[in-house]
Image (tube, rainbow, N blue to C red; front, side):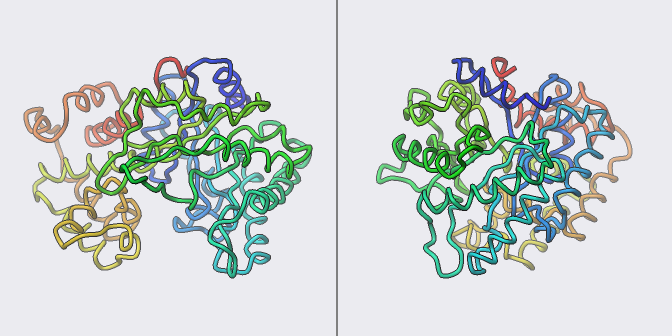
Length: 413
C-alpha cells in the first residue's frame, strides 16, 4: 500500500469524501485493536510516533524509530494483521525535543532524528520547525520555519538512498502557538485563516524547491479541539474555506490534529472540506482506560486499579501538573477521567503494569453478561463477541475499536 496516501489525496481533491485515520499512540492494546480493525475492514491505516515519544535518544517511551517499527510489526504479526497495510508516520519532527538548546545544536539533533525515522521505514513525515530554540522567539515566522523544514527534508531524501518513492512530507502546524488551540471571545475555536495557510504552504514550496512535489499534507486548524473537561465540537455547517489554501497544489490535502471525541458526522464532513489526514490519539487511550476501569469495578477487589493509578500519578505529577487545574476534587477527576488523558503516560510504570496484570488475570472464568452490562455498553459487548482472544482482551479491543470506528466511515474506503 505504498501509494495509498497519494491515492487518498487524489480522491479527496477530486471531491470524494476520502480520508485515512492516523493513530498516534504507542500503547500496545490501542495498536492491536486499531490494526485488527483495519484488517477486518481491509483498509490501510497510519500509525504515527511523535518526536518526543520516539527518537534517537529513546523519547519518553524509551523506543527508537527502528525499535518502534519492530514493536508495531510484532503486534501486527501476533494479531494476524498484514504488515503492508500499515503506513508509518512521524509527527512534529523537528527540534522541539531539544529546543532548550541553541538552534544549531537542536537542528543537528533534528537531522539525526529525521534520518533515523526515514531509514527505519517511516514514509509520512510531518516536518515542524515552528517553535523557537534557546534565545529565539517562541514562534518562528513562515520563512524561518520553512527553511529549517527544507533542511530536514533534504536529510530525509538523502536517507532514502535513491529510493524516495512513497516519501511524503506534511508541513505546517495546527495553530500558533503549536500544541494547543486558543479560544476566541465567544468560546469558539477559530479555524486557521485561509490566507495564512496559503502563505505557509507557499513559503515551504519556495524553500523545498525541487522537493516541493513531495509535499502531500498541510496541517491547519479546522475548529476542532478538546480540553481536559470539554470537547469543542465543529459545527457541521461550517466551511472555513481552507481548501482555497491548496489552489495550485493538486497533490496536497489538509491534515487535522486533535480530532478526538468529535461527533461521528464530523469526520466525513472534514473529508468534504479537504481533510484527508485525520489524527486520533488520546481518545483511543481514553477508551483503553475506560475498559480497564470498567473491569476494575466488577473485579474481586473493586477500585484496586484506580487506587494504584492515583498513587502512581500523585507520586510523579510531572505528566499532569500544568495541564490540569482546579481544586483537589477537580484534579482527581481530571487525572482519572480527563479528556486530555494524561494518565496514558503512566501505564508503562511498573506498579501500573503489575496492577493491570493482576486485574486481567483475576477473571478465571467468563464474566456473566449481567455483570458486564453494568459497566459496558451493548455496542461494546456486541463487538467483543465478534473478536478473537480471551474475554478480557476482547472487551478492551472492542472499547478501543468503537472509538476508532467513526474514522473508517464508508466513503473513506
